[in-house]
Image (cartoon, rainbow, N blue to C red; front, side, top):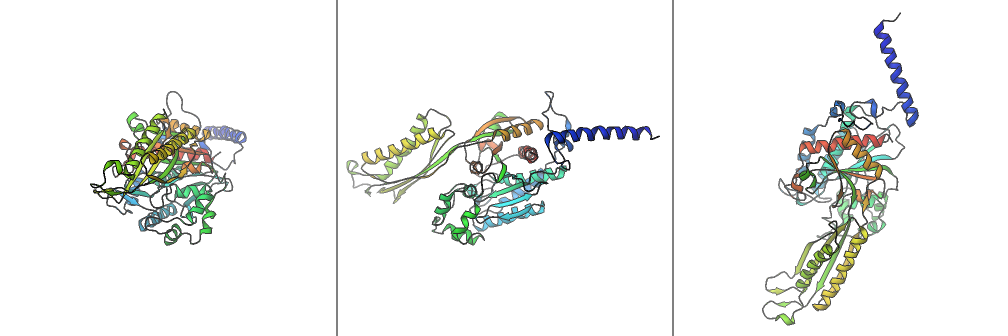
Length: 474
């Protein structure tokens, strides 16, 4: 006769195995894989209306190490602290890449790079032949910006993987972190260069063969100096096939004030606004600022100023708060106080979640440029659309997984639109996509005052980790 305690233990074991086997049979999962119920802190079911009990709080984010890593990465900068300047393929960019690759290796990820420097760190799942679940962001930084833009999505993704490893989770689909090359357009005037290429942009691959920076250094030469491609033919080797990943997630600071102002922990992004960029140039006759009377002038500077105001008018006339326009660059030649500008150069950014509405604004800007040139007797020497990208919508199932994760963690969340573009905009062409926003101080970004709190970063990492786990088991 077995002791009573042993009988009870055997009975409980039998009940658990029966339930577990039934669940696996229902889900067609490999019985060797620990499901969401099988490890502490990752419940499959929604919490009750009374709130979720304590196991979910056992998720362990090493926030102190994450902050230290962010601080160390910020030292790879061409401008003094607290600002960060990290430009594509420069010495500081290369050092930052080495730092991130070393962290990936220390976390037990297999690391590889493609021909333009996109970096991949993979944690193999039990079914490695299935399309992986990917996450990541960028770490390049515009001049005199902050230390959190993009970086939270790279180092935070690495910490999310470590959270899952510490929990004992075993992924079914592999999990892969992507460090994207050059999300910022700083050096070559091309935003999201790495992710655009991953999405298979033949036009960009062709353009990069002859693209040069402000110092007339070619893209090919710059990439080669950083240890990447040496032949333009290598660019297309970066392209990914649609479906290469089963899902892509990006953790990012909001870069706006909404979450902080409303006291909300997590932003679940439903769509990314469609960006378009223009280059416009006017040419006049110039002349002496004192000698040429006003009726005789052909002032390229005033033409540019008038067009800048026209951009504002057309954006406001759209009638939507989601339509925005910015004249971010306005340059005059020769740039002397006593000289009438003979040339002007503008670069214009317009965005909207509605592609058709944005394109109407672009058309009106073009019409205004022609009308202004004619009326002011100057030449519209260039009106060039640099990019005209469609918006991207987050995948419904990924939105549901992110919302479920936030609820499981008892974190407040808000469905919202990203009005800034991100690498996710282009990864949506490769796989289903989703984004997680966390609050940032006063919405500051692209400036040294950019800041995300330890608590907010930890919350974002937890939601990312839990969502990755859910998607990995699908």
